[in-house]
Amino acid sequence: MNLKIDFQRHYISMETRESLDQVANTFLEQFNKNKSPTFELNSEMANNVAAINFEASLQHPINIIEQKFKSSFSRSIQTYFVTGPIDYVSWINGDWKERVRLYQECLIAAISLLPKSRFSSSFKEELKTIFQEVGKEATKFEPLELAKIRPIYLMRDENGKCIAFGFEPLNNVFGWEAETIEPSEAYKWCGKSPFEYDNTKFAKKYYKKNIGIIQYREIWYDGKAVTKHFGVCGQTGETEVEEIADSQELLRASQEFERKALGDGFKEIGDNKLHYLVIEYD
Image (tube, rainbow, N blue to C red; front, side, top):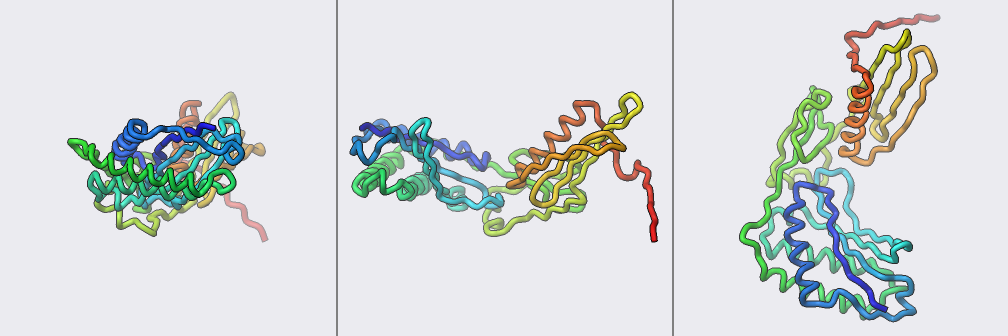
């Protein structure tokens, strides 16, 4: 049975996309040029397996999601997916040969994720040897210019607290300001997160008058999930809850909510423009 080997990149950190593409594309070219992309497997061991897809993951250490080796299998396309992380700080400080080595070692380490029930030890050793040989060839094709790593941007609220990060300086989002983090400063964020979420600060309210009624839409964050509440004032509204995995998802959810509300004719009203009703009881 023929088995196809393929490669992908996991763009968690878009500021490194060009540099990861530069290495991965060269590695793939040499793999296809010098080595056959298909292998003969024992039909009994590799039953219903048509391909292995190796994926390299590279993300800035400021990201709160921990990078791990992982694997999965898609029955519909009969493909194993194996993913391995690349050390970010080593990558941005490395020259061409170092980046090729990091990429190659990521792929080799991911081989161990393939199940023993489907792939023999001899097959894994053969694949490891091929990756090593292809890596040596790839180092010979150093580009005229090494792809640069772009900075990222920390979003801070009016109190200076970190709310999110992104790859573009998104100023004026909920009154946030962008702080530039250069690649050379990435090491400072290893093993720690700058984010301090305050759900009382992350709460937005939008209102709309419509034929004698007032409609509302609200969104707030409690540190784990975004809650969206909407309805008509004076009536029981509806609630939707969306789990948030990281700061990027938080930024996406808040921006989408605001864009939809404003597009539907709602307006944000600050607390200073609201009337308060105080209820006292014994």
